[in-house]
Length: 190
Image 1: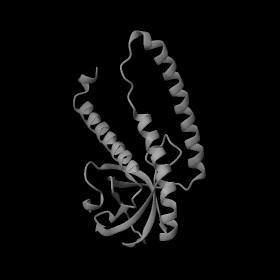
Image 2 (image 1 turned 45 degrees about the vertical axis):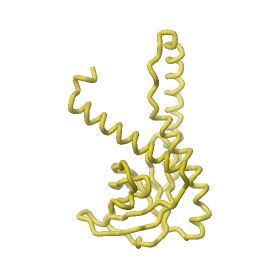
Image 3 (image 1 turned 135 degrees about the vertical axis):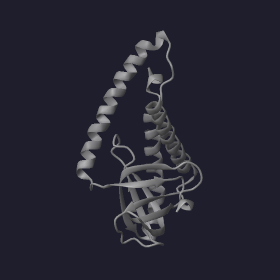
Image 4 (image 1 turned 90 degrees about the vertical axis):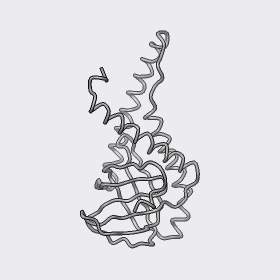
């Protein structure tokens, strides 16, 4: 159901996802905290993916030091992420489509029903110890050749969250296109 994803690009991947039924009153209370946390996580993901600008010769020494520091921070992120994942409930990867206003995924079977409020926890990047925790409303559950297609719409988390999510989806899309071009024309990367 494409109408639940929103306008624009869609993030398609196989990612660890967990979905738990939420009580409407506790969901409403948790939306603001989730929005702030999700915004920080998306900002961090976007910052990790930032490409460095070209540097001049006099910046080489500073660039080398920044690269060393970045490598150390990356290593720390991986270590912390590994520790957190060991403690957390392991979510199984599912085929999903993530849009600016909602998402859908395929499962073998589900006890979810349309109209239920849920918390969708989505591990979007293994480098980070946190997952997006998305307050959502189950919009539709339909038959799919591989099981059941669950479609949810996100509960409004504010304009800032929506902007960051769209930017994250756009960057993923841009990386996918670059990867496809590199596969088609490997000699151009040299």
